Length: 233
Image 1 (cartoon, rainbow, N blue to C red):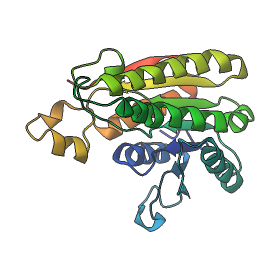
Image 2: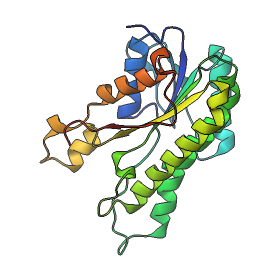
Image 3: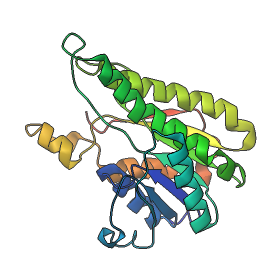
């Protein structure tokens, strides 16, 4: 299925486990992928990502740096059709024993990065037909468990960003949606929860396939949605 053939897709957090898995899924469906992150070597990327556009040294919490990343991608590839905001982080701490600094950090990494990247991409997306933005949220945005207040609050804010931007852009033909995974089967999560049943978790390429659908022509009528991707958790 090459329903993303010729589409240029930028992925923030592109060098993490989920970012790379999503990039491979999209490239396998014909997309030209651009990876945005702090640092990585193109030499380490195998097919189908060996022809990916690489933009490193980017701090997406800084609006100017985010704009630089998007401008570089447009200059190198000739445009931009979609943005996938994968960049994010997780922190577990109780409110009683935690710090307000953690809340700020979670909002910076999980909300501000998506905000800055999306704002930076708007001009390029508006120049194309059927522009797309997909934000990677979390199921925790719907209900916070103990120790997940800061994380869940930041992911809830990302949902509000998704909804507000979807309303703002719907008359431009740009859709904005979010996916809400439960626990993703990544090496860090396995290390943190070694006794868990990993088969119940969401595989990165499975989440990537949902993202691919939201970027496809078949999803043109979906915007402002928050789609749970829970596996068997």
